[in-house]
Image: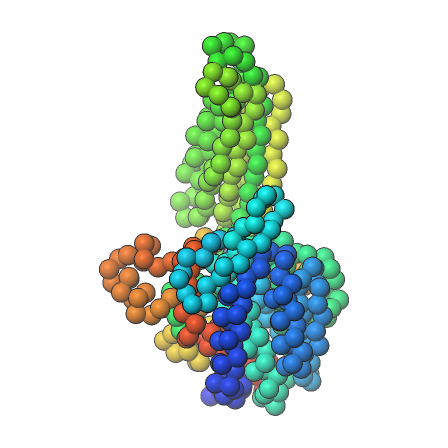
Length: 422
Ligand code: ZN
Ligand code: ZN
């Protein structure tokens, strides 16, 4: 047994004692979700627990972010990250601890429903458990644990705001950053993947300008509806004709708005695009192609003004460091046995990598299964996973409490000890 594996055994001997409060904490958090940048109660509960475990805690980092630091002699410094925010989704799980919470948001007149539909409540609970276990068995390891709880992952700016609020000075020198996400998949499994793991996401708002006129007099108009339609069609060639078949990317036009009435030609159209890519080079190539096509189609239509292109909701690509990932993969294989799996490439996006990128440290990001094992395996057998297994952001997303919490907690401990274990 390696030293880190025996350290994991020692630290995780406390798992049974953590389980009851973790399960209570999880159900409470699930029932009381908070939207991005509104995670005040969550952050207060996190800070309270971290202090109870003996961490030096800083609150209000980048808004509602919380950082707990535990120094335990010489050794590496490992940053463990969880995200805290929930989503404007009306929960439909029917769970006894389902959320009925509502919150107000800036651009909506009425309150919106709130749900932990992405499982960030799992992440928070697991990291609090791991932090507590590591604090309770300090003889088994040496170094520093940085337990970081970030706001607003769903908006893509929570990590960045913590960075801009002086995170580097707060955490000092860090050697590695680790994070996880609960996903559809057999609960109890944990999957790693070197290299690209999550896509970069970029949203674009494109406004093209036409010339309004009566619907019966097209000769007086530059029709923004036709112009927008041409752009939509031409954009379909970016992925299919400009990228290699081995380079994955997605370009979706999710929204198109123009005109008010059948017999009026409007004077502008607004398109909203979403782009997913897995490396910075492809990302730049696709965004350049979008710009080129929009400008050229405006020119082809005789558009009276330059188009406006505005990027928003941007997420960096998540590209796992190979050596870091191998170290975690080996530790997982030793601890979880055949429940340690390979994580497939994900089309979702995350802002986690903004933290290690800003700190200049390598990182890895893994997935844990949250689906009922029997139900998931039955769906795989029947070929109905896509229909039957609720995915993140679905109103039916409901990770089973166990073994999900045990697995996520253990994964953080095992991975951290791959650096800290004595
Ligand atoms: Zn999400
Ligand atoms: Zn998420």
